[in-house]
Length: 100
Image 1 (spheres, rainbow, N blue to C red):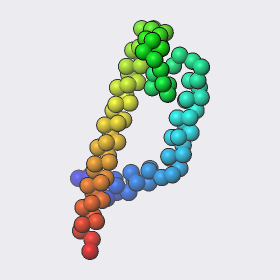
Image 2 (cartoon, rainbow, N blue to C red):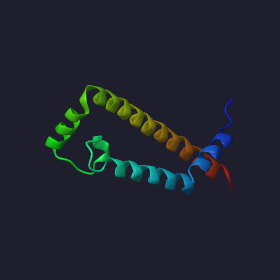
Image 3 (cartoon, rainbow, N blue to C red):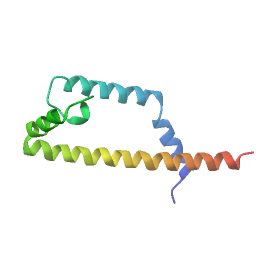
């Protein structure tokens, strides 16, 4: 049986300011690496439809396949953290209601 209390504590330890700073630094690093390059559309702050078509055509066939894989992984991460938020909030709410 899953010990939800230990799981909740481990997940809360991951959500510290240290990990927020590290993930922000990684994001800014990738934005810096992508500046001035074709890159993925996700790494652009704005683009026109013509620029989007150019970027997708510049990626080539292999680049488009890897981009689709990237988007699937990105979507999976969103689903995972969405479920985490629901579970964490429901456990926290349950705990708050049981304590008097």
